[in-house]
Amino acid sequence: MAQDTNVYTLQLTATTRIPERPYELPAILTHPEHISGMVATGELQHVLPKDLMAMQLGQIDLLMAMYAPDDAVSIETSSLDLVEALREWCDEGQDAVPNIADSSIDILLNLDLADADSLAGDEPRPLQLSLTVPLKYNGQLEIDPPAIKARLQQPAWMSKTQVAQLNMDLPEEDILTVIEHVKEAAHEYSAQSNQAPAEANGLFDKNAPLVRAWFYFPSISTRAKRDDLINFAPTYGLTGFLMAGKPGILCLEGGSTAIDDFMKFIKTDSWGDIPSQHKKVSERYRQTDADLARVFSDMEEITETVGERRGERANRSDMKALELWLVERGLGVAFGNVFM
Image 1 (spheres, rainbow, N blue to C red):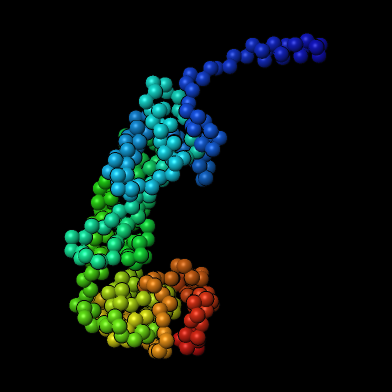
Image 2: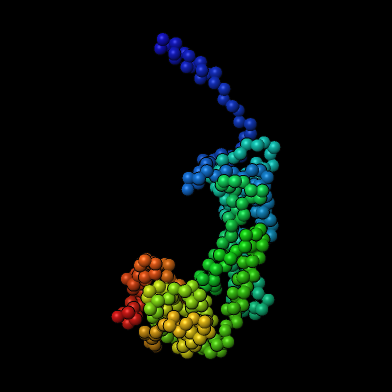
């Protein structure tokens, strides 16, 4: 009986019908590196159908046509190969759906901020926009393909707060509209930096002796107050950092008069509608060494990047982490003078 069973099994195996593949997919779409059915979250993703995939490829073609001549588009060679393989699939009459691991095509777009008011010799103000073109979708399929996602990278001439706000305000429109929005918003920030508030114009001397002032806040959490400290400091030629919370600390590097004028502007103009009891800030220490040099290249907020937030509302500053952060920058003595 065992022999018959083996024969029977072999006969079934030999007669089992193996479906033929109706269409031979491009090699890149069947390569192990591009085969995947699940994303990192475990949620099943589906490759876009041909009509929507063709629309995505068309948008990539449009971007390449507009910006490639100026060498403004950066895209990996493997991504270009995938684009061509997908184009071949879309152009064929077969309906076989490819299995690909890449859920999107990443593009880096380099833009030059054209400023009609800029003068010869002005420093260039470039922008880098990261674009993600989805190739797959989750859940219910829409009439249009998933929108291309854009994110502005941090340029040296914009503050981190400005970049974060710009990325939050990106419109849910077609990619060309998004690009124009980024350029217009960045142009406004550029104009603001070129046209400092009246209080700052001519009042700070770029050649004035450098000082470093340290200010202490019993508490500072309001977003508007924090943003103004970060955004307006550069217009007075100041660099430094802000750590919000309880307590908060502000460090400013620049001319002595510029620092005084900036803090006056903050208290009277920027925070003009804030009750006086909420404007508590005191200068704890001012470094005036003759050989003092800037430690910070711009004005930044370090609230979310240094230490852990503590307390019931996660607003207690991590003073130990701040001390270590300052020691690493040669400012350990200043920490002791501010808090001890």
